[in-house]
Length: 64
Image (cartoon, rainbow, N blue to C red; front, side, top):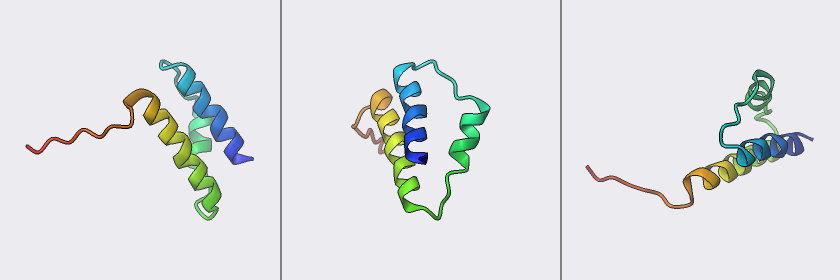
């Protein structure tokens, strides 16, 4: 259930770069149970999908 909701929230962000999460959505993300590994993996998967959409898969490292 949580995985489906995370996917819905992530889809809103991926589809619209200017989308701002609502306070309720933020609360849902903060309250993902840490005891349930499956939910944490879903959260990381969706965060990665958003990151890849806007930042790409490359890592830029500065050695200064």
